[in-house]
Length: 378
Ligand code: FNR
Image (cartoon, rainbow, N blue to C red; front, side, top):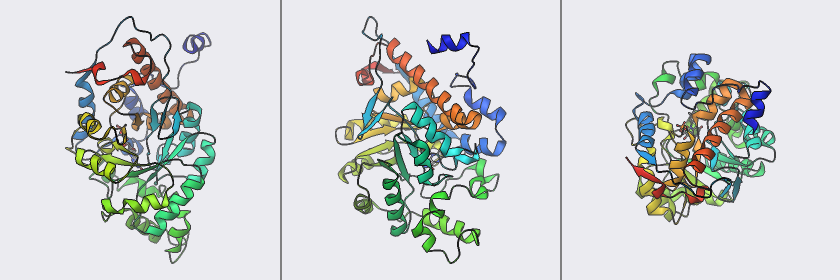
């Protein structure tokens, strides 16, 4: 109805509703640096392509004459209600693509009724983003700091500001070889905008001889050393439990044994993800490992998924293969770049509308009706 009525009022969307075209529209309209930051992957982009190809190998098998006229796609994941089985993935330094950055994303997420996952590397302090998100649902993504005091402090602040679940990203203990960023002397650091959470953190500031305003280089170096290096091990997860009263989700799981270890460690969930192909180029497409991980740990853990979801059909496929919900990365970030808060809303609503129609037209009424039998491996 809304679409027909908008047509009457000559209201056209802020940019294309064709999910496969959004990236090329963004390439035309964004500056090359920010576009490279968002679109780029590790190495030559092999794993980004593998992520997409993996979706192409599954096909939906539509069923007829089922009761699917009215659909209900709302769900609850780890205690968080959501209008659809979708979360906005943690994406750092969003002010690189739009001055309102994470604030616009937070407002759009609240309006859409889907949770946002705020990155540790956000351009705005987590408290300001929480204000912008208001009564919306929000989770906090942790890049696990090397100093326990800083870690505890970030978790404490996030909890106070109403972030209800913790997503711990394990695959980015150092940045991969990312030619798009390296060719520009690493844009996010040059802009120095992904440090807001650290630069407002009392435990982080306590370790500086001078405040960041007086010696920015020292502060940035402390930031880099705080979040780089692989000194974490499975037996340190209880530290996070001790300091986080709520669900904990490990992001970046790609091996069935790591999924089992997450379950053994008493985690609440995992995100099967290869960081959108931005870390290990040549790595397996994320969707390829989803079925075996779900069959190994699906009864013990909430399994979420990201990497390569672009369309409503992709979302349907990931859910049918056992994901409880999906995190969207680049699609909403292009929306943000193209039209700020409105752009995030348009990009996500388009994908959700397509999902809703595809769900119904293939004979399903709710996401819970989806099973691997809804698909065939081609
Ligand atoms: C990311 N991602 C990410 N993940 C994370 O845990 N913390 C972060 O700060 C970031 N930052 C970030 C920046 C940009 C520009 C992108 C594109 C991605 C990874 C993100 O959460 C997610 O795993 C992928 O984006 C999912 O893949 P798609 O949907 O982009 O293909």
